[in-house]
Structures are given as C-alpha cells and as structure tokens.
Amino acid sequence: MIGVELAGSRARGTYDELSDWDFAICTSDFDSIARDLPALVEPLDPLGAEWEPLGPFPVYALMLRGPTVVEYLFLERSQKARTPVTPTEESLPAINAHFWAWMWWLATKASVGHADLLGPHWPRLYGHMLEPMGASTAPDSIETAIDTFVPRRDELEQEYGLELSRALENEVLEGIRASRLRSVASSGSAAHRAAEGTFAGL
Image (tube, rainbow, N blue to C red; front, side):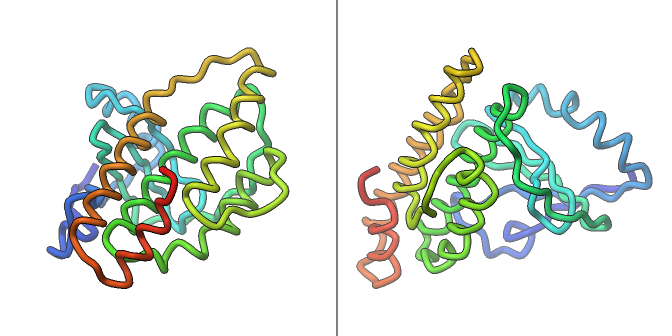
C-alpha cells in the first residue's frame, strides 16, 4: 500500500451526520490488498461487507453498527458494472447484504432532502436484484422496495435451507426510522416533506 487519504464529503467538509467515511487507497498491488482486506477489517466487526458491484471503480464497503458506512475506494482502477446476480444458495447472503446497504444509502440521501436522487435507483434495483428474485414491478419508494424484497428473500432462504443473520437488516431499519424522525423535525421544506413521503410506513 502506498497511501490512504480521507475522501468524499468528509474530505470536502460537506458531510452530514449520516455521511459515509470514504478512504481513497493508493496501491501498486491491488490484488494483494483485495485479498487481504476482509481479514484486515475483521476487528471492526462489520454487519456486512461487500465489493460494490455497480460502481465505475472498485469499492470495498463495510456496514458497521450505527449504521455507519466505511468505504475503501480504489480510484485509480476501473471496473465494469456486474451483471444481475441469479439467487442461489451461495449468492443469497451477498444479495441480502447488498440490498440493505443500498436501502441505507438511499435513506441517508432522503433524510437530508435529496429524495430526488432516489428515482433513478428504482429501475436499477429492480433490474439488478428484484427481478432476478421474481418481482414483477419496480419499486417506487424505500418502503415498497423492502416490501418486495423481504418476502422473496425469506422464501429463497427457506428453499435453500439457510438462516441469514438479521443483524444488518435490523440495524438499517432502526436507522431509517431514526433518520426519518430527524428529517421531519429539521425542516418543513418541500424537500423534507418529500423525504417524509419516502419513509412512509417505516
């Protein structure tokens, strides 16, 4: 490893309470770092960890309690978005972790009045994850995404004889409820009213 720098909104000074902790990693041996990262971050006891499948460069993302997101960005490399993952006994745990990380990212944007950013994600979420799980329509809110995902996840879990941890799911759901309360209390603006609608029912 050559160096590590704080990146993203926390480096720019434009962060809020729920912003990710982004760290840009400079390395001449990406393969070794990628191999060793899961063991290196194990002392943080992440609820979820994944290589993000859809970004333009590799990102290793951790979901910690809070929820708090820590991302290791490899900005000097590029990647192509992965194709939708077919649910299997082997892939379902990763699908579950990716879904809840995605919901939390969307919730953090909505909570600070950026509900307008959510729209483009619904067809992506549907095509990449929900349609391969058997859903027939794209969601239009965090609530409908969760209502679509959870029963299908549960059915597949039972079919495969798995018992997935609910720790990440519970942490994200509690975080969404808390962020909704903060959003409603902070402003009566149209943007925050839109955020309130995004969280309806949660």
